[in-house]
Length: 187
Image 1 (cartoon, rainbow, N blue to C red):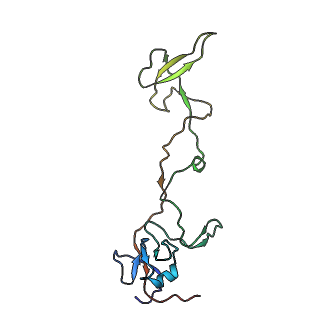
Image 2: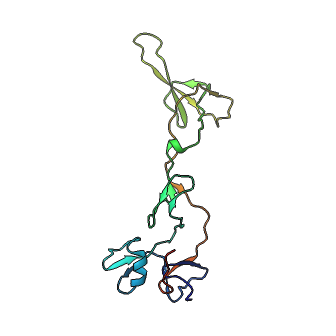
Image 3: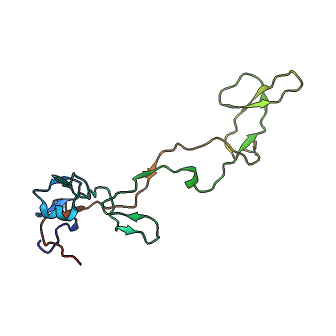
């Protein structure tokens, strides 16, 4: 393949690397051995730029055109990486939603806390009388007729804060860079 430019990337549907190409896996190369490729890449993708340089690392990454996005937001600089495979949402990123706060009107007792029951605190009946705990058997679900919706209020937080995958559907292919070929002329 001599119709390619040095430094050109191509996608191959097979797993081996063709002669005159190297996989885009971030490997470090010596400048002395790959002078023409270094003259184009410099140390944009890593290396010290004196003795060695790195190839682009496209393993698990999607290429994006450099420059400012059409939406006018992010400026993508050549060789810079961004994004993440997983993202943990902050409360500001979650859609608006509510958590219903409910109570039960089940029969209560002041006996010791039976296992699996809900606790409530009753107000004191007179001066000097301490409040006391009330216990009630737990209704089976929020649809139980003994559950009563309360005024909108803040309740305890929920969720574990674990990141979720943030990746578009993918197909893994071999992406290689040409180390031999035609020197790319300037436009």
